[in-house]
Length: 205
Image 1 (cartoon, rainbow, N blue to C red):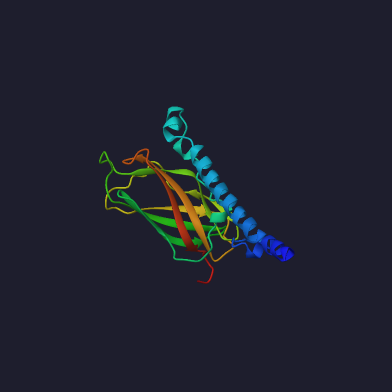
Image 2: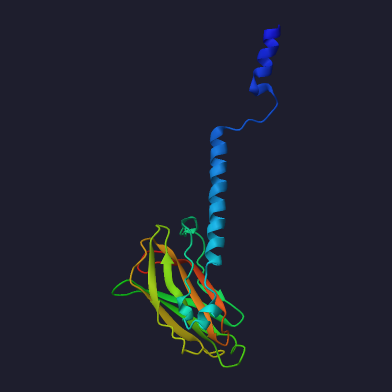
């Protein structure tokens, strides 16, 4: 009789408590660590970005400010809708076309100024860091923009510039990262632009 009671008390399946499998606890703990790592990565990165006013005081060009690169966990999947338009109160930037070149491809952009800026003299921009694309296969490529800080965009008059990438994405689609900083009209303002799921030139839709 006593032996039976002792056995029932020692049986963990009958104590009324919820027992989770060790594998579940390990996976849950790993997921929490990964999310915490992503948060720390993001916070640390943005805290270490140089201030554009400090760069100006030191005589450095604003284009030296680096453009963020997403962690591997944020790589594009190739699914979802295409995002090829970036809009702000003062301007609108749109991917006008993607075309194959002798080496790599060219991305063309239309920029429409919706205002003449804070001083009425029009808008001009500098490229921040290096434009780049990233695809779901963890490949990336850097580009060179034809945008000059001396180019002024006037309200209602569309402007145009291109970015040449010497390397082609390996997947059917890719994400494109472009950084701009205002040098006139919106001077000092920074725009980190992310275009999503753009179709690779020459690939079937």
